[in-house]
Image (spheres, helix red, strand yellow):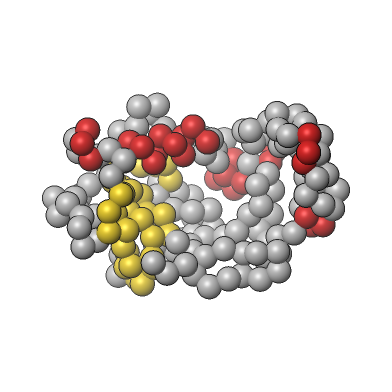
Length: 174
């Protein structure tokens, strides 16, 4: 299912998807991908990373430090390596570092343990209503009750856990 664009009122005008790649609904976690790879996988280690020759210091692409491999100074994904472009089409892109910073600093964030009736820890990231709300991070007990999931523009960022070099680890619980 392709995401629906959500306008969070960001300075850049960037629209964010209402769900992760591979999720059928916003409250689902989606799939795991390595940076610059477009195939879903469960094992993440340097020997099976597309852009390296087997170890942390042999990166062949997306490298900005020679101690980690061949420097190309690429910090944004080429379309061929962007899972959003490859899965949802050219109108979508994986976010840049600047876009992530903007989301972090310009929205109102509420930590929750349930979203859309499903037990799923994560953040509801709302379009800030006023400047003083920008960058605020709170938990659901201290959230501004005037923000409403049903009516206010928002996205949900599930805390889905992580995959280490060998295993899918438990979801991160706050």
